[in-house]
Image (cartoon, rainbow, N blue to C red; front, side, top):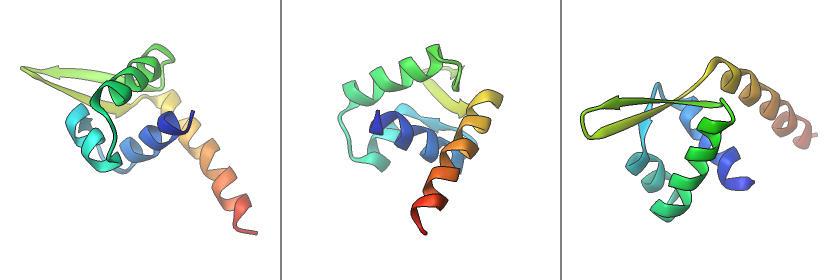
Length: 79
């Protein structure tokens, strides 16, 4: 799904992001992004860290590997 790829690439650029920051950056619906981040957590690609009312999203070690795999496709499209 294109939203999940965009979320992974965005979270990769930061140490961690809240759901609101992801929604704002991608200019998307909160419910949509919430569902996709939930699925990315289930897949083991994103970690959640609870800080009071905030939930920070960061890439898991497997998520980092997956993002570098995705980037190989971005580079191959440039040629």
